[in-house]
Amino acid sequence: MYAERSTIPVAPDTFRGVRLSSAGLLALADLRSIAKWTAVTGSSSFLDVLFIAPGIHKQQSAGELNRGEYPPTGAMTTGYVFRVENEATVRFLQTVGKTGHLTNLVVETPPANAERGMSALIETPGITSLVLYSLGVTATVASIVTIVLLEDWWTLGILGLLVLARLCNVIIVRRRSKIGWKGASEPGERGDLLVLLSQDRWIRIRGLVDDLKAVTAGQWLRDKTALENFLIAFTTMVVYIAAALSENSSTAGSLVLLVLLLFSAAFLELSTSLSKGLRMHGRIMRTVGTPIEYRRRLDLVQELIQETGRDDWAIGLGMISRPLEQGGKGAVL
Image 1 (cartoon, rainbow, N blue to C red):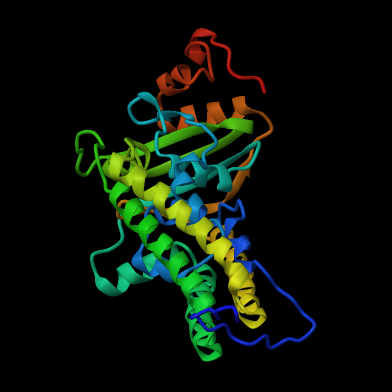
Image 2: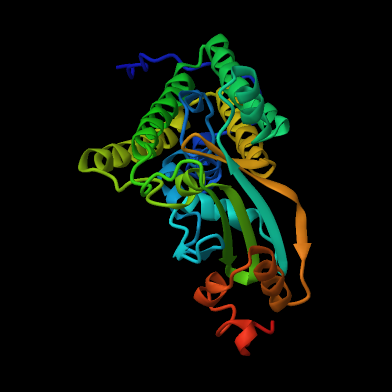
């Protein structure tokens, strides 16, 4: 009796003496690159489906990238004190903030003009980030073509499972990131916020009040529904199944998959790190100038109080005990 042969053809090993098995296990790497890119872009596009990188099953953890920090914030135009509730915004502020420095940012709505609007969107992540992102998408397409030419159907199926998992996560993120409650609209009003981040990082954000509310108030990713929880569990299992099946890939197919995952992870991490701004609910947040260093926090407080003409926001933030003209003591750090 002869053992039955597998009905699924396996591509011949191209590299004799070299054995690459289970390259798909790299897809299980505990990387947050996809989650970070989701936070930078404020949502997820269907083009992301073609960006296959490690950490597909970690995309829904994008809301945890702020490491639990919701920094106190003072509105220097009204004296109102609150917290920044948007996790993606907090995460962006953490990346641009610098200890002992004031970092200036602006929030704005892209121009309605198509050409100017596209220019603003390109400038937000930066041309370098967009090129790196495009390379990642191109790498996936090139890998699919190469695997088809190798006739390695096992590897093609594995890549198909990863694309399926990516698609499900993209759909869920798009559903969860729809704009929700942002408070009452205040058209035409301008705002000026001072955010006190941990590690003595100070952020000043200026723009229209409605734009500021869009990036700071309410939920970014709403709570998951029962169906979404089921789909997340399903896609996580799909990624693990793809990793388990990678043992059946040929050496050439495994090498293609390995190179794709390695380069995609590098492209996405660099693209996120080099991004010059944040996109959120149709608004753009970007840095202005370079961070300004202060010898102590009291110098910053006195300068901003003199500029804004009020100190109630500083009292509310605990930066001074009572009005300075009444002998109030400020932060001496």
